[in-house]
Length: 241
Ligand SMILES: N#Cc1c(-c2ccc3ccn(Cc4ccc(CN5CCOCC5)cc4)c3c2)n[nH]c1N
Image 1: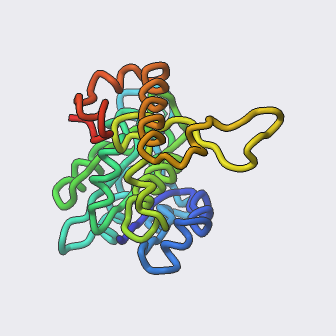
Image 2 (image 1 turned 30 degrees about the horizontal axis):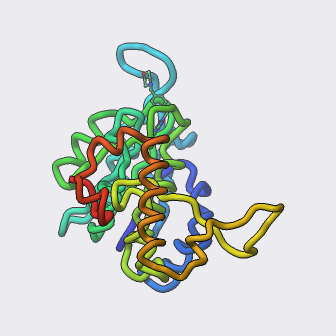
C-alpha cells in the first residue's frame, strides 16, 4: 500500500518509523511519504491560512497550496482515496478501517486552524474518492493525531503486518463485541490468581468462557453494540449483521 500524508507539521509523523508500522515500511508492505504543505507555498512567509469569509473565529487553510499539493500527489491514473480528518467527518469504525485497508493508495490531508477551504475537497472529488473522517465527538487541534490513529488501524489489517493473523480474527469489534480480560504468567500476582478455566486446557470451555466475558463486558460498557449483534454472535462470535 502506498500512503502519502500532507501536513504543515511533518515531524508529527516521526513515530511512523517505529514498531510494526516501521517494520511494514522496512519490508515494503507500506510505502509511506510525508509532505510539508508549505512546499507548495510561494510567498516569503510560506502562508497557508487566511481569515474566514463570513467572519467567525480563527483562520481557514488557503486552497492554493492544497490544490498544488494534491495536483502533485493525487495520481492521474487509478484514483487514490483522499482521507481528510475533520470534526464533521463520519465516525472511524473498524468497518471503515477495513475499507481503507483494501485501497492501493491512500492520501491523508491534515487540516489545521478551523479547517481546509471546502473548495479543496470539492475539487479533489473530481479525481479521487474523498472521505472525511472523525475520531469522535471531541475537538483536536488538527488532523495529524487522527491520521496516526487511522493509519495504525489500517496498517494492522494489511496482510503480513501482524505476525499472528489470528489476532485479527479474535480482536474487539471484529465480532461486534469488546474483548474480555486477558491474563499471563505468573499464576498468582499480589495474591490475585488467574481464572481456573484458562489453565484447564479445555479449549472448548475456554472459548465459551471468553465469549461470555466479552458479552458481559460489552453489555456493561457498550450496550449500544449489543443492539446490532446478530443472534449468531451470541453463539459462535460471528460478526454483526
Ligand atoms: N478527525 C478528527 C477530529 C478533529 C479535527 C480534525 C482535523 C482538524 C483540522 C483542524 N481542526 C481543528 C478544528 C477545531 C474546531 C473546529 C470546529 N469549528 C469550525 C469553525 O466553526 C466553529 C467550529 C474545526 C476544526 C481539526 C480537528 N477534532 N476532533 C476530531 N475527532
